[in-house]
Image (cartoon, rainbow, N blue to C red; front, side, top):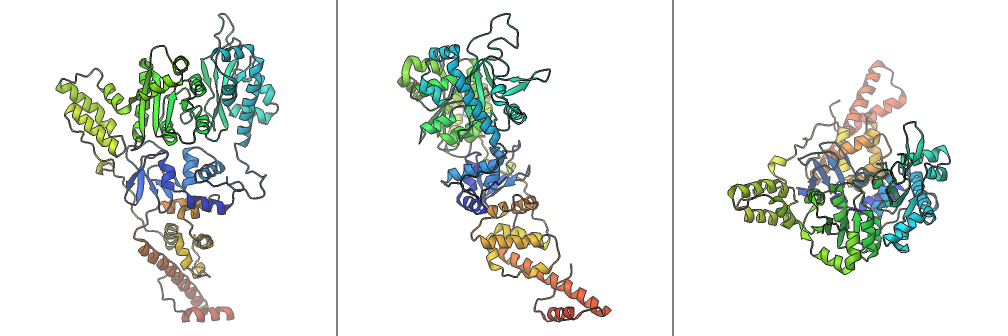
Length: 588
């Protein structure tokens, strides 16, 4: 939904941003001729079929059909509404989004009420914290100061089944929103109850600082014999909000907002396992820590992390579970490790976590541990060599077999080359890595198909909107009664009115029109030839349409003349058509 954002601003925004830059921050791209390519982020595939055109400022996947402008990519990839995607892009290039109709008006975003309700929930939990002696005692025991409690908006979910419902669900619409936000749930009898009860509450914020979900921590274990639905501390130690339209735990990181607020130029970010670990490090003077939300590190997490800082340190327990989590993080990071990005692994002593260590050793002690973290390359080969006899030929062959496909997932660059060299040094076997754009990964792109003259003209105009400046009004092809003629004329008018408009911006003007899908397919189509040849083909298509229009009208009027039914105006028109200098064309 465009809301009240002026079309002229959308034009300016899409002219200022580079779609290659927007997408590459989220998906590793590789140069492929004039375009960039990658494995599609919207469906599973091994062979790249996702193409980004810097000329058209447009992306298209030949596998699943996803396509669009930089705005559409953000909407699909980040799951944003149109106004939010525009805001995100505008912030990246230093623009302020204007609103038509006055400063106080706001576009009616679908999720505005949901964001507001979640923020109100966070405030309500904050208000309950001072009222709970046990919550206050727990915060004191964990060494949390008032500044940290306020910075992270910590709160308390009191006992009872309907605290949030009574406070915020005072009508049917708000109760529906509480359910949509994951704040309330239904029991077996269909009755609603608060999802979070007797838990320390941690609001989870999105990249714009808005509350999108919560994590709740038990602070004391239930007494034996207490009824299941009424006992204190029922359920897991940590309980997160369920997946909602706003919250996708595989993409979000706890405290990323606070990290960005505390660091104007961040060079390093640390991933820990718990909310309290994050807060302890921030409080100790290391506001560089984030945590995943009860899930393993995902590829989406790693992309967000590397967009935030060039160096990422994954901090895990040194036990088997911690090392398994570390390997999953490595696996997710490999395709994102283009040159300039580095990953490290810090394994903690048994029985310790970042919270306990930073309180024992202070900021300087934990900083030293971070400096001594294991580089990804070292961890990679150490882990793969585990239980492998490197003194034997068979053992070295096993290491090579394990490492080759993983190194092959690294982006082309110096790090990939050095990892391949290291494998050869350790095993004596050549890495034998194929370039990622090798023949066996080549995408079978569709060939150019025959189109109608109207569709060809539109496709060529979308490839070069500047061609509209070369077409004088009135448009003589309008006399041709064919589907798409009016759309072609409107596209020409739009392009003429906005000199310098790029292809993606031109298509975006039709975002809320039925023609949008067809225009997206045409802009994604292969347009053959150099720009000058495309220009000649475009004007030839317009001329042929005019010829067809003249020929069809002339034939119709001549038929009426033979029947003796021509009126005076039609006789004059026929004389003009017969005298016209437009070369004849075959009637289609």
